[in-house]
Length: 288
Length: 214
Figure 1 (cartoon, rainbow over the protein chains, first blue to last red):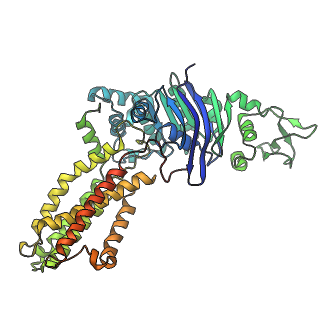
Figure 2: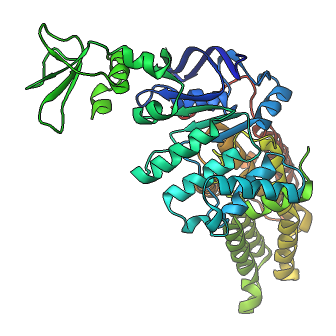
Figure 3: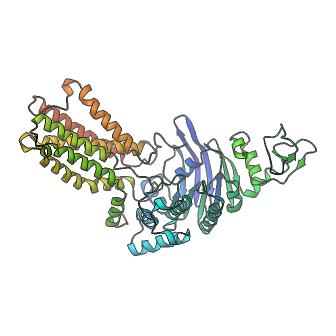
């Protein structure tokens, strides 16, 4: 399958901090999850691929266009939808006005046609009834859906979503998962998240980053399989475990190299993720 | 550009920090109207200082012109940042010109300084504010650089008259023999502000920003 995004050797430094370190990846249609601890470089990678910031080294193409040239960057941007970690809004705009504003910036010509497209995406994210309401009067979840509508307007071929479910309650998160799953039908979505459940439920592929580099690139099943035979239960925290926590049932779940005779447990995607990080991330935080 | 200019201008107009600009404009006109309102007859130096205060007030408002709370969401759109920034300036420029003309007319004509020279000073302060805002947008990730730029401008306005050596004096009175030379320096500053603003507008293609999110 021809990749939507093909990146090779992307590197970016902020002063002495290595934000991206020789990142190469290929993205195909469907939802690809991007996992990693805070500071792993996920947001930086997304911003580079979204052409919001250029890399120091390396190259990439989006839908065959090279953003290293001015013309190529314009072509990429015409095919891109981007939902940043902190979208930010003009709070006096209504939901409709804001998405229409983004549609204008995305060069959607023809007022009638553009307004139809804005209504379509607002309907798609379930904001039909509040599209005339000012953004400052919308809940956090609704605002996040306005931002998703702004990303979706113009039917982009490549959608970049940076932690879209952060701060949402479980019901809103479930609703957002439905939306992202729908968005991933027929287009390429790169979804950065801290939620391994998001990846397990939505993604056909997962990339794990740590310290600016790709540590894993495969299917969720392959990431889960990394933890096969390396998860066990015990009455107390096993000091030899790389990570361990008390479960709701009172026993401890341990991840690492099990001692002989350990009671092995069914691995999850999160277990595989913790083992891939293996000291590269803040595993205590991830496990919490 | 594919999008209709009128649609783009209308959308950008709605994103302008109109309250801040209106507040700065109103305050500036109030300052200019003080002599007329109080019936005072200020000296030429007092009127000049008053107009410099008016110009600074307007520039402090313009420091907020490039604030854009949706900056991160709209960073990768086809309509380029310099186009959007230039449009903001173009939309405000005629109003700013009218406002400054009104301020000039409000001060007593008997003590009004040469209009061209004081307008040059006002233009420089306004362009320095805009260049500072453009630099903040280019070099930082903040969506609202206005307050920091305004604070820096205010600080510079306070410190410049105190710290500039005699040979480089900018804030001189009309009768001062250094008046013409000072306005040559204002003209150089004007050119510098234009160059700085023009440099800060475009988005870099191949090099990263100097500071950014982790």
